[in-house]
Image (cartoon, rainbow over all chains, first blue to last red; front, side):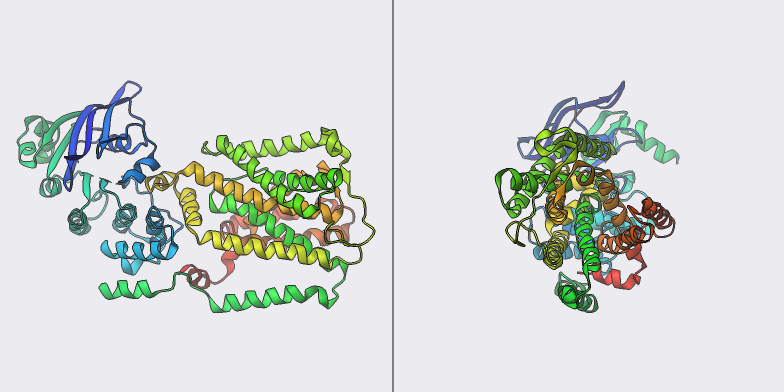
Length: 240
Length: 337
């Protein structure tokens, strides 16, 4: 049974079809990779699922429940966490406080929330930075902060928007290892990625978008050989 | 790495800075004993104003500093608190203590009613709305016959000093202790609030509302909670001040200057910090009172010119407020809890 099932999801901004009739599903415990050139509608898709943008039509079912058009905080409380492409740490708070705020979702008691936050910070390998302000952290560390903060809300599904984007090359393997570690911890994951090698390596299924349309959805080996994907996206990688 | 986690888990959740705690206890004891030193009416009056504005600025600090919503009409809750207890006392003989509690309740309800439509809006709409509602309130009370319209209401003097009527004729010391009690309780509660689930969620809303939502936080609900708490803190100061000067009138109780002063004092001391409002008040109130003494009357508004100058200097040199003058390591350690 799929954890998330999206059918015919559409959103237009004026005349621009940001998402047009998008359908896919994510199985329990899987990693779904989402690829596509800039402007393909990947982040819009996340915004539609998590309620930051209201979809025009379609259906979104999470664990059998209709979540179409729910507000972001409701979606979060139902068990869908997310990170943002443009990072949104609470800059005037410490790393620990950032993650505690996530932990408060299930732990009203401050001591328990603190302990839980520390364990998750240790999980993302940032324990020695716990008392640093978010603004003092590097981009790679802030990505870990966002993952830890989202993890602290105990999501069953985690949507990651370009976790490996904008960080230097040597930081990437650690972040990829972290995504695997999260999967092993039982979290179902959808991740937007530009790095095609990473996406092929970690994904159980891949959803390819181009200009708001779904151009392919399937196993990594099928996607690799799909002519439309090659034309829209992979081809340009080869040229580069 | 595992040992690092164990060590982190053993750290206290609240880090108490011994020297700061010692200084605070010492200050509290001194303030408790202060009236016994026979300081004279002027210094008691000065301290009463400091306690009162410290609470009022802290009230503004909760909505603006903790949740990031700028209210420009916060004096309105001061006025409503003042009128609630005064009208109930004059018309129905109800003790101002009950009136004070009812004023808090009314202000909390009004804050929720304003907050539900206004705090859903983002940007500057809330600031504009509170400014206009604050001014509107003054106009309403200037024309409302039942509460004395423009000339206001005078509290008749009781024959004897009385705790139930909250009037003390021979000494300002009882007023001093009443304001001091509210000051201590307010600061303890707000300190506690800042270290609670609600406090952290409010900071999240302030720093990034979208990120807060992604963590399951209902942003509008938390802004409304902060506004209501803030209003409830402000209200009793109006009730107590009315009993202190024994007159309520719209020009005094709904003076727009109150809304500006609480903002100015908090920003001067350090917005979003527990001690910032107190520091700002402890500096501006004496300046204001002394300028009145030396320049006569209302001080010729020289204090306001001076405030403006201070505010400009703060904005340029110390945007985080005077509290940022304290050694950084003290503040950082204060945060490690």
